[in-house]
Amino acid sequence: MRERRRTLERRAVAITLLVLLQSLAMIFFVADVAGDIVVDGWSAHLLVETAATIALVAGVVFGALQLRWLILRARLDETVVATARGAMSDLVRQRFLDWQLTEAEADVALFALKGCDAGEIAVLRGAAPGTIRAQLTRIYAKAGVHSQVGLMALMVEDLIEADAIKNSGNLG
Image (cartoon, rainbow, N blue to C red; front, side, top):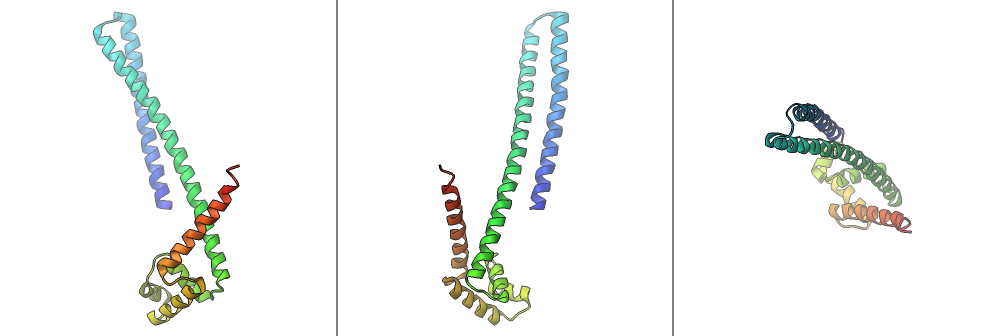
């Protein structure tokens, strides 16, 4: 998440610098067109140069507005992800309590929810694969599912239902 944020910040800085450079070019061309009109009056060349300058101004304005929108959207996305992460964490903790998982089972279940298979969990926990498989079997039985996919689906379903209940009060 931090790396994604740094990447977004770097892009925002790069786009900001680009918009600033375009703004400087825009100021130069607006001043040049205005000066040419004052000195030489209107000509076909100046009409083309004026049209190009107007397009540059429109591009700078659009770029600045787009940059602002992207930054606001990135902030909103971060907020949504943080909220979802918190809700998922709360849900996982509550379900582990509801199912009366032991501390070891809760650790194994968390790794299973993260997508680790029994062998990976065994390595991470420094346990025998058979022990992990036995713990997973007990976890699935306590949760009322038959597999790791079922466990994941149950958590997602609970999260969606909790969100639907929360949002049904907002329909108003």
